[in-house]
Length: 313
Length: 87
Ligand code: SF4
Ligand code: SF4
Image (cartoon, rainbow over all chains, first blue to last red; front, side, top):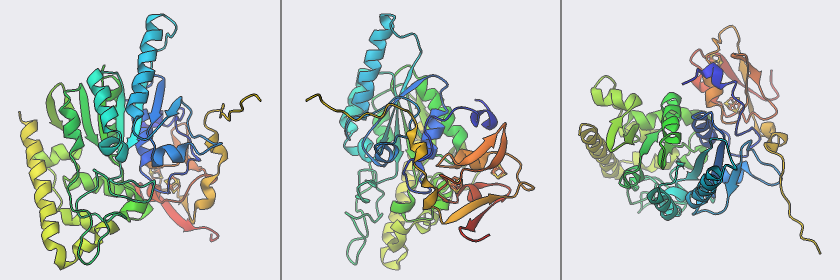
């Protein structure tokens, strides 16, 4: 990997002037992902915050070819581009070695875009799919998604006197994707930029479909100060709610801080710290919902132990 | 009538859309404390930390939204957020 000073010299692929909220993690993640290759890239983007905010007509924040067609088909779109590229390359009409990446929010990954994503992986296209996971449909006003945490308040699962926010646990989409037996899948966080850039580089060079699920704190929807975005991403990892790991050639490997926690050289923080850090969980601090907070911790522990077991296989 | 389509032919035109007016707090760096680690550059969501030849040169106030991530992440506490309109 090149040094951070050299990275700062690389011409930017995503410019300033986009309209994502102050402190949004998405452009930080995209910048790190795109630093994972020095080859020309084509980007496809699912409908969502990231798409709408980087392409408001008559402006666009992209210095690389970028395509948006619909909410559900970022993966289908990029597989079409990649197929055309392979044909043109075979015919000698394109010489460049090009890489393909799709960015999608959690709605466009876990829910609406899942079918297109699963199909594109099964067909074996060479592309990297990045989920910018802010755990709800933020662009349309914070509605729950299949990625929303149990206990989180959204506008479609608000917290009130009877209901403590969302009542279901999120899907474990990274494991669902890994079950496709693809060359590369990973979980990452923008606070550990080295880990995320390395994983992106592996994804771009996986020689087949690759998937990275990245936690993307959202000041507006998670109800935290804009300055706290990176801290909160780190906290997700330190509580083991969002372990850093990769799945490559059928093997699970824990990485970054998560590896140190698994080895016992770093402390695992209680989920209470995570709950306290964001307004969307505020109601869980009420003794009335203590059982839910306990259940939250139990679920994190259970998933973490499962991952440790997988990594030892 | 010939069809008219509106197409943006130039890349990166969002640069012309200045988001600096969103800001209520402005980052200011103390270069005596700064060690040019560029952590602030890595985490800026708005490409607004200016770097030249590996050195932090200041901020792109035309676009910086004042989120405060740079100040919060700087390991040397070299960046302070100052209220706009005040010195
Ligand atoms: S993070 Fe702090 S020390 Fe590092 S370059 Fe930025 S201002 Fe300087
Ligand atoms: S305050 Fe936010 S937008 Fe402005 S330079 Fe710092 S990190 Fe970038």
